[in-house]
Length: 261
Image 1 (cartoon, rainbow, N blue to C red):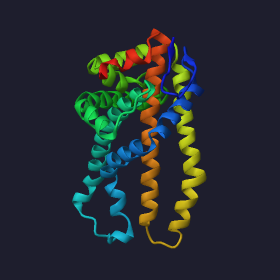
Image 2: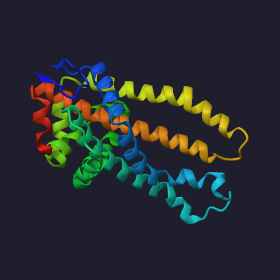
Image 3: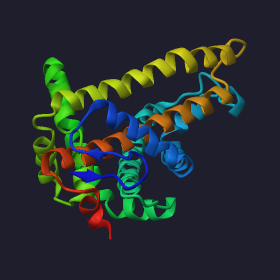
Image 4: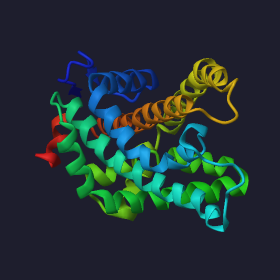
């Protein structure tokens, strides 16, 4: 049994519950809204340069694309992958410290994240390839792989177990809780879809109604929304890892976070 001393939940955590994970994830994010969203924006911005190149306000001329422009989406994907990997490592650290009742500064979190960037990239890449292979097969195996490997990155950050060991650790921790983990994933995706359809879609449509392309304002809105959900996803994964360890192993938050001392 573990008592969360951060003030997020004044109640013992003894099991992995979908509602509790979602609630605590939002509380962690909002308690650290400024630094977490700022870090997410900084990390996400380089991967979104393609959006800014497409805005008419920046002077992009249609029809000027050359052969090299075909590499732009590939480069954007590579930068996006590196950015989200660093964000994941950074926010896992910040989230675990917050759950312990402390507060990690943005600089401290970034330094910790940079120190673990290589293993996190390797784990993220391998997990992504496994999920992609499963999706290309029959979709369902891809969903299963995504669920089973949901907490591989936090395992790499907190336990520093190595690439393959981190994947196996995620398989071990999610065992017996995979329907609930899938429920957490589904809720996050649903919240994202609702906000984008109900709020972002109409707002962007209004802003682009009298424009020939995507105005800079719409691009900024899209970037902020993407940064918010990237941060929420990273925090939710970290909270999931934390609660799974408590549910399966009975450890306390102090024990989980002790590796960062």
